[in-house]
Image (cartoon, rainbow, N blue to C red):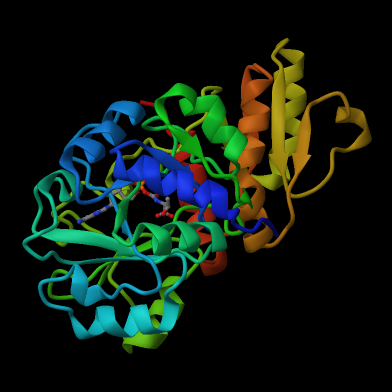
Length: 326
Ligand code: TXA
Ligand code: MG
């Protein structure tokens, strides 16, 4: 949507910073990543410090379009090869058995590694110029909403990063689909823009949904609360939206709304964002909208529930986590 092109001076500065072991935030088509040289233990450790993230959480290694799975995987499962051929560069992370040179700090000590080739001109220019893998989680504080604009990263991580490359607003808007191919059967660890049905069409069978039996690792799907704004968030059925808002107002509370339709006239004083009523358009705007509503300091962010269909699975997943309270 509003992706911007790389600037060669900035790419050169970013590469120099990565080589010095510093952190560089960069845009991808899903969300912004907080990048470090994947071959430097000290550099990757800085990611965890900046995010306030537990060190046993593995990070994804981002690859340039000149790299291959074979550079990072000890053995490449045929299913991984097929998915990479079909969807890379793109919003899909593949978990595969790692080669010996992949650092423990990257994989959380696990025998597998998460790999992704992002489809964004700035990310690709950076990866090609750097030449190696860039380890990067989303560029937000642990447990918070992923950034989809450079300004989000600056506001949240500011001083911890040497540089924030600006690539405009991330096209997809939610994190990549993650498929684990390191076990007997493909498992969908995190739903994303590339759907289970699209993956199933390539593999000839749909991926399994994660369970405690087939998921050894602590993937984001196993943390009930993730991607959360500070303001309490409540998911409500569209049919009851107006009634619930009127109730909150009657109690003297100040709600803000994220819906798929405009505010009715009698509720026009409520801060209200209407996102498109299609899953791709909604996902694109979701995180920026939650950040905007969160900033208002209201008592409640009320979100109109989204359709219960496969196309909206990744959006439902993120909203459910954002609504979860410990
Ligand atoms: O779209 C994305 O994937 C973004 C952009 C920046 O590429 N990255 C991202 O990273 O969302 P992060 O760290 O916030 O989420 C990646 C998740 C981690 O929480 C981790 O649990 C899982 O991927 N992961 C990474 N390597 C893994 C592995 N070897 N086994 C299981 N899960 C893994
Ligand atoms: Mg994240």
